Length: 482
Image (cartoon, rainbow, N blue to C red; front, side, top):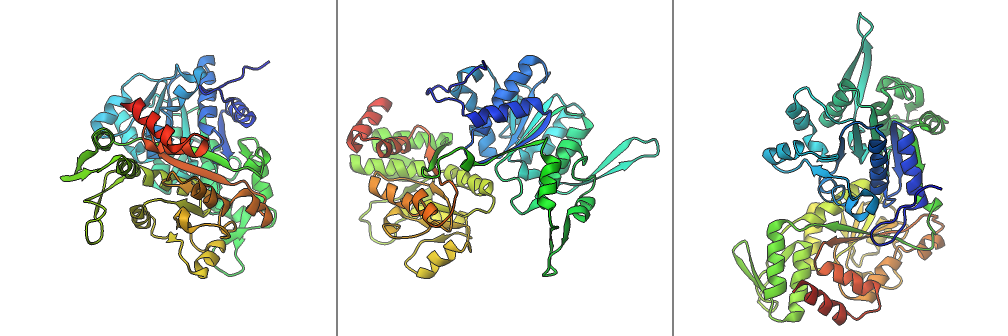
């Protein structure tokens, strides 16, 4: 009987996580295409641990990921699982001296964002200690275009073409003959089947989909009937899937989850050190100073709002009853960055974003100019349901009963939450499972809460999810943090 794994909260490894682990162990150069929130990180760490223990990986592992994920997800995940607690992780992040120090620190796993890959290759100066490379969100290297050539002495020469990070990665993987490669993504072909070639090439150097991108296109694509761009030939998708079936494991959420229940996930962000200090001052003393501006809460109720604002990333200046428009300063952008990564991971699937404070909407519109706020115009809802823009920003109070948004998306992100349980439930119902099924859409609904770790954000979620009163949860939280 195989060993079963449980996290520190007693939640078990899911059956599909064992499938992912087994695929990564069995296939030296593999891809896992699994739905958002499938637990790819824990499954991958479990596979890497088993491979290192058995000697099939005889050295450290490099994990390339989006910046926030490299900093806050991979280094933390081993501590959530007793069978992984012994793994040491060194994030190669920050300034050049900080990255250099992390690189020379002894560890089992090293995490780094893609943008620093060229620096890493230069820093290693002809060495490459990593015996396995994990590409988290492998679509970041989908732009790779390469050609394989034979020299006069019959040696192979690869010419890398495409984005800088893709070329740098190809150089390292091929030159140093890295024996283990794992690609992870939920959306392998966000812009169509042509996105698959670069990712597959990094695994087999063209054996399955062709040794050049041009050959790949000629075999499986043809000009669109409009005369603009290329589209797949009849049967191309099935043929490409068959060619990759031994390398790639594909998992769909609807095969594993009840369509009548939403899939709920929490994305935790960490406050930067300075923002953490300001948050603590507000929580304990009702006062802090930000960018030279005094920020004061005048009672306990105001303190909770100030703390939630700081957790979100902003602070209002002055008093609520001051004349004129209220001024604010930004404290951090961690939640915006987390949302940006979700947008990238969704690969073009529209997202409904719930916010609480007016200033949230200003920041969201600035960071995501293609998004629109929910307003009273019927045209906005109609165009959302037709998929004409990628993000809809909605305050839960304005997305009440009777509003149908389900055709536009099946993904809801709570950028900030309030204590109002009715509003929290109602905005989910705008795109919820019942509405999806009524519209004939057989797809799971995802809800993501973006939460600042060790702040009142966590207490808000507890109050919303439990039957305890807001007051009890809040008093416990304040008592706990002293």
